[in-house]
Length: 313
Image (cartoon, rainbow, N blue to C red):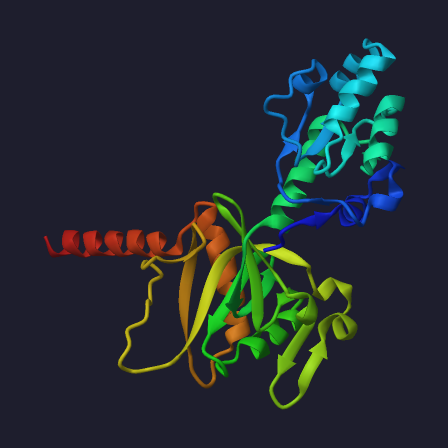
């Protein structure tokens, strides 16, 4: 988990405009994902001023400041420009008040801008900061995007996860991470996986070594991150174990507070794991859309039993 995000990175990643304080971009940082729209503060109420948040000015806030006298504007802006305030952010390409620029320059606070609407800009910045500041865990496995579905392939070392991922990439799917996947919870229902910076776009194949998937297969063969929708656990075949044959046994694995569906696939010589995982992903998507082949089989079986019963009578 990152403790903070520098304003320089915020500006670069979200392509924000810098009105003032460019020299302070690397020195200032955000430590919380919440955004503040300082309506009450503009009226002089500072009892609960969230100074540590990005201060977002939309059309309402800027219009309000225009009705203030210059001395009052400067006084309010100076009170808002606390030592721990990360930045001022103005939406809709609105012109920031001169008093804001003056107070920000005095306090060493950047003033940023965007042409997005206030609501969209607030959502964009919040989602970005939540992703960067979220707690992260490292999981052993391979994360692949299969038909837009994030599939985390797990299993013991040497079971064939990376080789299977390579075959999936050759079949047109996209690699997110190999060997180690950094995961974080985006919201109550979504966990996201990404590769550590040192392993991005790389895949380790025993006997060959490390290969650069992006260099060999092109930019379309990789992806930076994806939400994890399904876990497929590869397990060496054992006669003593019983495996689900109808697909009726649902299993889940908790990642943070999110239950993620899990399928166990036995590994045996002669099985094409890439095709099996690809079909498992397609079948999972079909189930999520309301079609369940297991229920179709059970319905057909019920009709057959009923037909045989009628013939016996």
